[in-house]
Length: 221
Ligand code: HEM
Image (tube, rainbow, N blue to C red; front, top):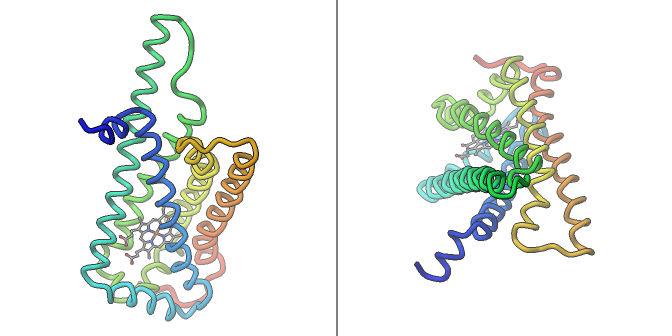
């Protein structure tokens, strides 16, 4: 294997790659939130529908971006699974040899569980919108109809909180994994990560709350 291949296959390389894919996914979330906010800015839904049509106008380029996004998610999940397994194996090995504890930490385990919950939510979420043909006929109507149902609203609300918990640890952990550990910058990165986590959780949770409790328009079928 090349030096670059060796570096990527090492634990440090996998962590750095997981960090990078995680930060790119945060970039996606910023754009996703920006698009979704059009639902709240303009309750008629027209500007959200325009935004969806604008994206669809990219045709094959949009499909390529969606495939890229799916690969990014898959890479992030695959690396998380590999690193968690390696941590568990390292812990068992150390226990036998030196009877010391190590490997998986509370932080890494909670990341694994919140990550697994987000993955489950995402499958349901993409099924709800992206793979429902009614979405393309009338995008805002399907989102409103989905989020104004109590069961769905609860799921989307809980998922937003879980996403916040995942980001509150994951953001600063990504910088550590990329070797950025500095007495001056690390506390700043940690605070930024926590602020981002609260902002994302609050903003994404606002959609189910708004459509369940405050949406007074007609509920489309
Ligand atoms: C309650 C807030 C949310 C709303 C209203 C919402 C709405 C939507 C809609 C309408 C789509 C279909 C868009 C399209 O294909 O053009 C979509 C796709 C998607 N959403 Fe969300 N979303 C929310 C939260 C989230 C969260 C928290 C995540 C990530 C953790 C997420 C990840 C995705 C992904 C990966 C897709 C597929 C993108 C694509 O294939 O184009 N969403 N969302």
